[in-house]
Image (cartoon, rainbow, N blue to C red; front, side, top):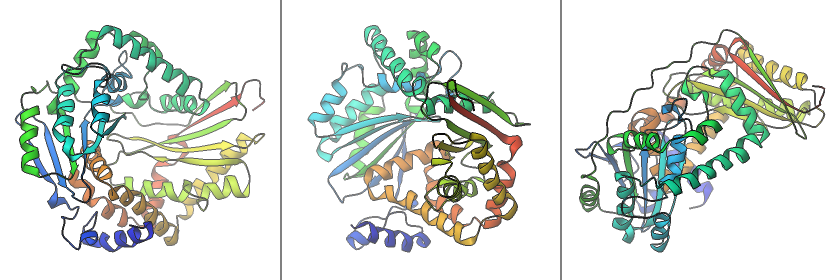
Length: 450
């Protein structure tokens, strides 16, 4: 289907509670509606979400665990991401590298990602390979080997990843330092990669205990979308997963970040060709009533060449070559980012003042209905485009379970956005994007005069 046709279809279906339409088959297949998502739960706590989509003979098989850097503690930072790596390095029945080999032999592909709030394991394969792939996933949920030699080898991989991706990447290093300055108490204080001293100090027994707590079926959601029949698939799920014991209840995350009571500032001096600028503001999590307004404000301020900060910093004042940022969908309160890549020789003080002026214009004068409608159109496109694929459907169902507390919230999300008014965008800006709630970070070339 051409992209333009899909856009028209999506906008036509928004008012009918449909997330992926029936037009392609004249109504022959079930629409991607809340009531067409089958929900099951095994006795060991594993939650299973199923949606049959028979357009192509493939299956998207996604496993989500409620564990991310939010669940870590000092001394074990980065361990969630490390276990993501170890999940491909040997389990009870499959040795190191066997997961990928079997997957590829059967014509499939896989990946995984770790975030602040959850970890996801993603498989795509022909439907004929379903049971073989299920064996792989159930086996590594049952238990990993954590072979000492493999563990040490993978520890070195993670340490190298941190050196290259954070310590030798100026923008990411500034992000890490600003985040840690803005968030002092909550475990969002550290990033997914963790601190180097922790990476080098993890003990095998600690890693194994963490795995047993957070990678149990009782802490997981299995999402399957594609060309299958639900009852035979559920029989296979019971066959391969029912014998895996439930784990102990994970400890709750109870630490709340105290309110910020004044602006904070951090400066890094490091070898660099051009400086970097980053400002962040504390904002609520994705379930908060103000989140849709803040997400739309992100587009108005930062997305595209018509956004306010792009026009001001890049087009008009020529202080920067790019702008980016916005809000992340997180369980707990996190940060609104305003990042700018200054032009060589640009005055960082002028850049920061221009950012403050543009945000103040929203606080004082609000946004126009046209700006809000444009932002809503963009939000709809970002939301609906992944739903063209079985992988996109599986991923969005699982993310809704993890962040919003239930897949059902996915089907009302655009209604929340559509209800936002220009006054609510202005009020959200006045409430959160204020100097006393801000942390500013700059990275200037070593020896520079900024």
